[in-house]
Image (cartoon, rainbow, N blue to C red; front, side):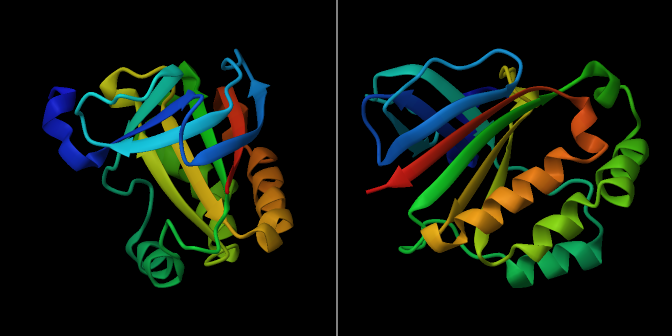
Length: 187
């Protein structure tokens, strides 16, 4: 499937000098960094963008993976929508996992993801304060496997920091070989 066939499921984050989101910090947590930029523009679809950028990261909205039905139902009930007026802080965290992760079966990955690392259960604790969306990038040939996007109000910044610390201290994160943490603010 070509990118043009993805339509509105394709999301692009363009780092440059324009965009709604002002960059507060870009930090490499693991692996090669991204070039510093002033702003990040977010746009949908496969059309050509007029946004000039130093880098563009693309991902696709896909079906939810590693989630069992009761977890999915709880996520759906508690999840806040993106683009809430009060959510003027965001984090874009691109992640790439190791070949060892991808060599595991789906059942083995689920066991690490939730049974050992409690990724879903931990994330649910911070809903609806922190809204999130996962974009899949591996299948479209991008340099990262996932783009994780979070939005929250400034008063929930410490809760978001706690969530990130908790998830980075799990067995699952031992399989991460590249991660960039990009913090943003909407003026």
